[in-house]
Image (cartoon, rainbow, N blue to C red; front, side, top):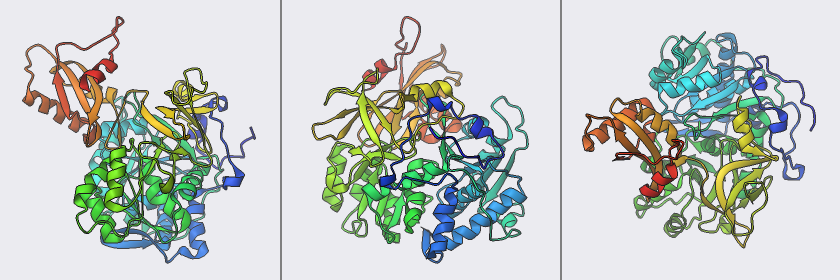
Length: 548
């Protein structure tokens, strides 16, 4: 393994909290696949400044209701924000900045500004509540947040205090998309439209993306500047095959790396454009595709199913390619979408730990019900508990390696579990069929995947258990035709409390108040006892069987 070049970071928090190098996955950079990168690299320079220098400054980049930004517009605003970060807010290279907002151009400008200034981006989902924001800020030692003004309340509540209740030192929250005197826009007007990007190393951390961990606490995954470019140079050119005239559109938030790649990084790498929708539920997504003439869609299988009855006679005439990830794509959805639109959905599996899609197939090569084959640049296997290849057709654990890989933030125990013998063990069960296609079977952990959202059962359990009426609780995912899975809670009430619809609604509303609303249990079943082992451990597999 080659020695690291000097870091461009002054704040060494991230570098000091990388797992030991011996626990890193084997990283593979195939020069023939265009995956060779210089030792010094700032991905913002390559994706934004270099594209403007190549003549894309006046080309449209982001379409949104009410307007359009060019590449030049984004560069100017990102430069002004970078100047604000350094001059007014004291950001030093390596400092972490929490970003919070729906999918809009200012959110992207903040993202690039942080990287230009040598900082580390930590995006959060717009639906997160204060306790979840607080946890993220604690784990990544964040004291500065940039938030859309409409989300200011929860952001301030999460940033003002730590998980222990103590005041967060030097906490500062700055709002954008605001006319206030202390807004980011106000600060930007006083700063120049040019900025000299920080000279970061290719393996300096660029972003920390948080998972929805199976323990209920999200795990921070650290990705380098080189990783950001690597995902642009694997799945898009080899599987998606987009062109500069394409218009990308989709529903995933930018804090979800599926959305970050599909709506920002991938189009920018080739000089294309994208539609940013703050409201992207299936009816809004369909209308956005039609209004802006989108040609490529990124969303979850649930959304494709929901859009089918809305297509009508108008259809989606400009759409030519569709990408699905976040949950398994049922063969029935694949076939129904193809019948209705003539488009074969590109299925794919990725993970926050790997940053983006690593198994997929071109539309002409897609097989209904199968995820696909390793994306060029990646290797994949199906292995047993000892890391040996299983027989063809046998169920095993998915193992993958390539130019991206898992590096958990300050979590050696989980790093050892995820990376084994140089391979990333994703937590998914697969089989390889006779044609070499990888076919998804199930999750190997307690993650619930509902409408493309990763929901940790233990996290929902912990919130329900805070309700004074609840004695015990077990939360699992159960099958659902529309959402893939839904959250179901098995609840044992304390003496003096009556089960029934009113109590179920009270518990559901309690969860919605405390954590992101999409995590609430859509089904609540009251029971007298929960299945446990002789040592008292909850047997969630029994609950899953009962729920199914």
